[in-house]
Image (cartoon, rainbow, N blue to C red):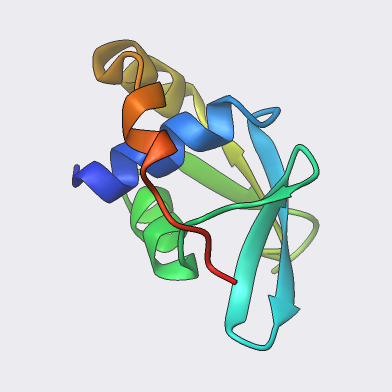
Length: 92
């Protein structure tokens, strides 16, 4: 898992562990806990491919994202990443 993927998973855990994708001028982005995630959709796709987050929202829908059970286990190994998150720029 890359540092960006670790940071994204940790960020989502600090923002209700669940979010929804929205479309904007720069593509899809995740909103969780009322904030826009500072990570690209491709980061979330890599986490989903690894089974650490899951997409849901109905048949054939990928509009919502939440941390999976294996993702919760990975968070234990990742530990606290507050210092790393403080240095990540926003995607405005």
